[in-house]
Amino acid sequence: MRYGLPNGLRKAILLVCCVLFISAGQLAAGKPRLLILGDSLSAGYGLDASTAFQAQLAARFPDITLIDAAVSGDTTAGGLARLDWALADGADAAIVELGGNDGLRGIDPRNTEANLTEILDTLKAKHIPVLLSGMYAPPNLGEEYEAEFRAVFDRLGHRPEVIYDPFFLAGVAGDAALNQADHIHPNPDGVKRVINRIAPIVEKLLAQVARGGAG
Image (cartoon, rainbow, N blue to C red; front, side, top):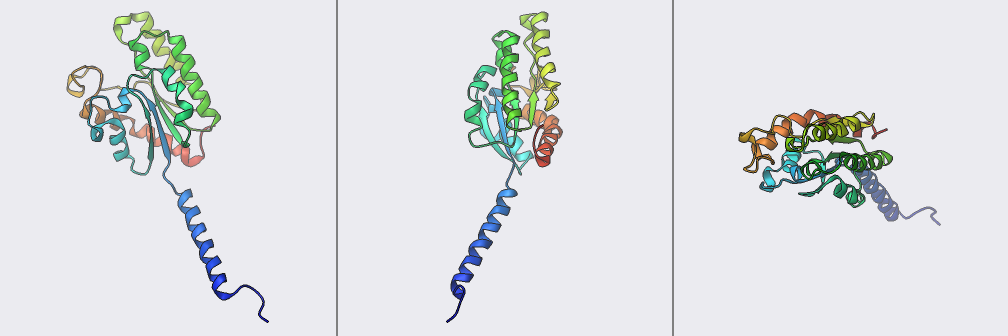
């Protein structure tokens, strides 16, 4: 009598083990998932999808998978309300680009800060590194409001687990050649300018993913 597994069965088990090993390796080497939690600036309002922020970002960083959670017109309250949904499939890092619509609507900066704080707290609890991109309030609301609004982002940007970009539209805002007719949203060239500027910051964010996440 022969003991042990039949030769054919033994080969089948070995094949299954090899497949599982390869699949596990592929999963470990999977693309980092980058959540874009934003408003019209990162949703690509007024642009063809191929020239919008996320398409240009993906072209610059082909080894990442984007999770699109950018909604035109959204406020910080809206971003907070859908954060759990946005994280349902998991994320390895996040760009938070919110606040522009708070400023346009003259929302109390204390409310903006409370919403962003809860967003950042949630991401920190899940050990998700975050790039917080700041926004300026429109000047027509007065110097006091403008200063209070900007201070919200500066305070949150000093959190030790946050990578801070003080102004998403730096080098683009106010330049007619880089904006659409509404003078608010970047045109494709303006988006390209944004991408070129923040690319080194995104690289820093992705480096945190490689090191194992936020503190």
